[in-house]
Length: 144
Picture 1 (tube, rainbow, N blue to C red):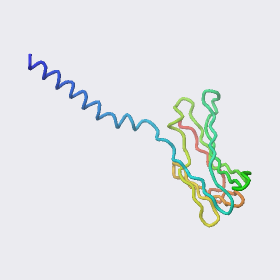
Picture 2: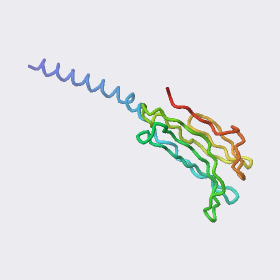
Picture 3: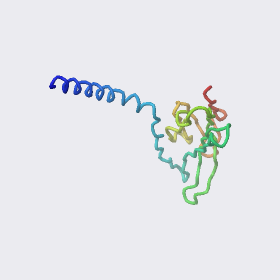
Picture 4: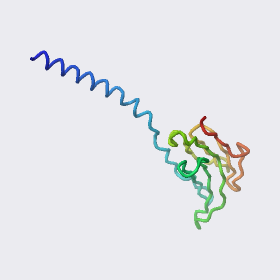
């Protein structure tokens, strides 16, 4: 009888160890929360992001657009808005694994430098909102 108890205990312990060892793999399948990006303020202007998403449940042309926004700090009025990039979603896949969020934002030599999660760099003139690099918005296609 004691042998049966130890056999059951050993089996339960093996299952527990195996389950716990798979836990990190399972948790890697979920997307981490996007980076929290603090607005950058310079010469009376605040630079932030705006993300617009289109639901795949409502449309087969679903995806996201990311805009860089310059606002007047005193009035709150928008100086300019610039689309940085678009990401098309494959409606057959979960959208959370397809999103590409902004990762960082900083100011250097009168330019706003933005970087997305894929590492693409966007340099925008802080006064006008004109794209310096790349010369036009990037479009990320849907996974196929």
